[in-house]
Image 1 (cartoon, chains in turn yellow, brown):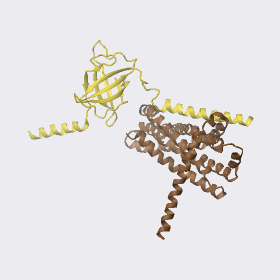
Image 2: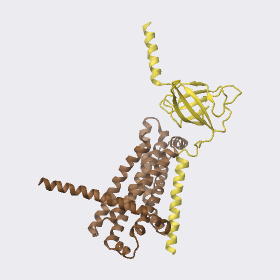
Image 3: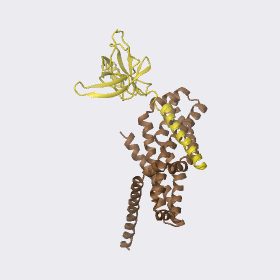
Image 4: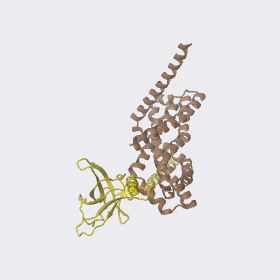
Length: 156
Length: 260
C-alpha cells in the first residue's frame, strides 16, 4: 500500500512536470500568449501586389504590432490581392483615410503590413476596407527599373 | 538451386507478412481491451512510472545537451549572416518540431522499449503468460494494455520536457555564453513559432511515436521465441525496428504536417 502510494506520488510529480514543460513551451516559446485568439475586428485592403506576404504576418502602426494578417486572397475580377487583417480590439481609432503599405523587415526579412494613420475624424469599423494602399516593393522590379533608366540615360 | 533460392526468398516474405499481421492483430486486441486501464488505474500508474518517470533523467540530460549544441552550431551559422537574434527561433523550432519528439522516442525505445520486450519475453519464456491464461486472466488486457497506455501517456510529457530543457540549454549557450540579446532571443521565438502549427503538431508526433515504440516493443516480446536466445534477439529487434519505425513515421508525419 505504502509503496503503491509513493509510486503514485512520483507519477503525479512526473505528469505535473511534463505538463509544466508543455505549458512553458506554449507560453514562453510559441506565440499563444500573443495570439489574437480570434478577437478584435477585421479590416480588408486591396493591393496590386502583395509580394510574399503570408497569413499570420504582423500588422503594425508606428512599428508596434496592432494585429495580424488573417488571409491573403486573389480577386479574379479586379486582378488584385485582397488582404484580410484582424486588428486588436483595443486599437479602435484607426482613421478611415489610413494608408496601408507592405514593408519588408530588413533587406531579406519577412513582409508585414504597415498602417500609417491619416488625419480623418472618422474611424474604421469592423469589415471596412482600407482605401489607400501601396504595393510591396519587389526587388527584381526595382533593379529592372534602375537598369532601364540607366540604359536610357546612356542612350542620350 | 534456383528453386531453393526462390523458396528461401518466399519464406522470408511470408515470415515478414506473418509477423506484420500478428502485430496488427495484437494491436487490435490491445485497443479492444483498453477498458482495462479505466477499470484498474493502478496498473497504468505503475507503467507510467516504469516508462515515464524512470526515463526522465536520460531525457532531460540529453535535452539539455542537444539544446546547448544547437545553440553553438546555430550561432556559428547564423552569425555569418548577421542573424544571431534568430538563434532562439532556430533552437526552439528544431526542438519542438523535430528533435524533441524524435530523440525522445529513440531514447525511450532504447531505455524503456527494450526493457518491455525483455520483460514480456521472459514472462512468455517462463510461462507466466500461460499461467495467467490458465487462471482465465487475459494477459493482453492485464499485462500489455497498461504498458501500451503507459507509453502513450509518458511520451508526449517526456518530449515536452526534452524540448523545454533544450530551449533552456540553447538560451544558456546563446545568451549566457555567446552574448545573443536576451529579449531578441525570446521575442523572435515567440513571434515565429506558432502554437497550433509547431507545438500541437509536435505533441501529435510524440503521441504517434509513443504508440509505435511501445507497440513494437510489446509485440516483439509477445512474439519472441520462448528461449533465452529468443528473448535476446527480440530485444535487439525491438530497438532496431522501433528506431526505424520512428524515423520513417517522422518523415510521413512531417510531410503531412509541414509539407504544403
